[in-house]
Amino acid sequence: MEAARLADLAVIIRSKNAGPYRLTFDVLLPDAATFKRVKASGVLGRESVAKALSLKPSEVTSLFELESAHAFKVTIRRQVGQSDIGESDVYGCQQHVPLMELLVA
Image: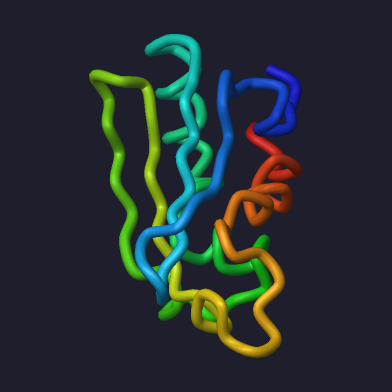
């Protein structure tokens, strides 16, 4: 099977606030087979997510797999608190783009 970008496999990839000091990312996939493919690839593991978002692995605070929903949820520490000086995305809705480019084997 040829590698594919996560954006080409997912139905939804989004980011949003998870409080003033956290961001959460949701990846929703169309079916069980695609979910299993993404899970087996490891692209949504702590190290891969941290690398894609230019973070330390310790800044990825939680990872959840929701097999029945064909979904993954990842939460990270914000680099700058919500609405603090230097913060550039108050709602956290534009932070998911690097995850879209992850390659799934």
